[in-house]
Image 1: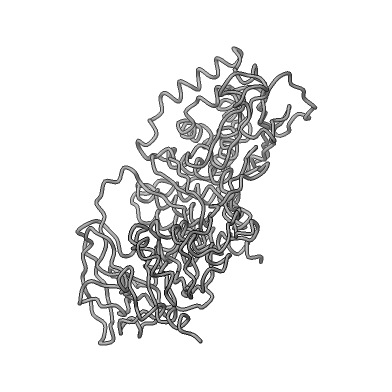
Image 2: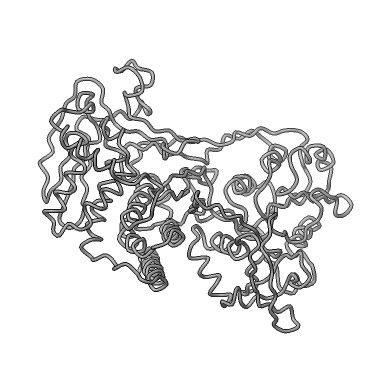
Length: 591
């Protein structure tokens, strides 16, 4: 079995387990959907995403696609056979414009010609998400004609006459969707007015997006979320995930999720399968005040261990054997299952989940600090989580050896010390976590020459299923700045360093600006996009591809590896030692 096949098998089992656990915990449970219903929904989903994001008619651009997802799910899921499924799909989509075919066979594609500009969707990354991304239908933002300044998002990749995509919907059905239309075709036709009015009335009768959580809405959530990842996620080559195979198990999991919290967890499992450290699900309707425990947790020597604490009854170095009465290993595994990304980042997210909860909630831990197991009850309170013991944010640790914590010290605080740091024998930079603005600010004081590395890449999408014409490539274009820090330099890091932190660490590693001590970073970088699903839950994901500074080597799921691997020990934590910092100082002091 290949690695990809093993991963698919594991994730299939995980989704089925989620569905089963959700179903068993709810009484009374709704009947689970039949195989016929699931295959109907999968056929609808495969067509829905192409139509929503790539069919270029004016009608399609104006329709409420979240409502159509809910209405469409309700219309197709009980179709008793292929003929009725085809009728339902045609009624949903063919009124949106010309050229859409659905059937067991498709007509022979012929060479097409077009007079004048063509209308087609073009996306710079997930263009619906804002930020560095853009999305538009060509020739629709301004006047028509090749002289229009905004006619094409990618002038080098104009749409072609007759461009289309054929989709295998499963169950013996296929669909053809035009990807380019003439202006007249895009504007619509009176011949479809009756079907369009009927569809509009059906959408008007539906519940507004974000209200309710009936079965159709839960299925629609999966239809929308699965399609966004299918067409816009830039890391399928790196993950090797067979996303098409994940659709039906995700639909089954949503069927069992009869509460809003359970639906959020079902979607978290969907996101986890994309292996995206930026992937997450939040509920904008949740008004609950959250708090954190007065302890931090880590996995040390294969045990769940308290790594930081502000309370004497639960000291650092104590082994945690149970959380809320559940065995620690099981509690951690349950939290890991709902996180996405690399193994090390999923562990970080899971540890945060175990130490947070509703403000004022009590959590019972069973711990052993070397004097035998005992129970302690800790309360979630507002405020930041406790950090492990570190020196002051900027401090001289020994004559000529300085320490700067880039997760606490700001650029404004660091700037007045740069002259001193430049003359130091050595500087240890702490990037075990997310940096302040000082992270990027310090880099120009470390490099020796201007750089134009292109390590961030946004896809120029010209068709469904992540069809990419080219990439927009860019970097930070740093220039050396005085004073230059010329002494020995060490960066400490670990899996808590993600995204912007890894942008900084990417420079350190690829331009060999310092010795790196600690553990592997999270392995996720790139600007984040987000979208709402019909239930109103918000999903985030990475919309940009990041590579090594050579523009080619993989970074996603790889991250930055340390030159000197070091991890805390239980004995060290109990003695109040920072073993990573100790090793960093040893590197500075080495002959």
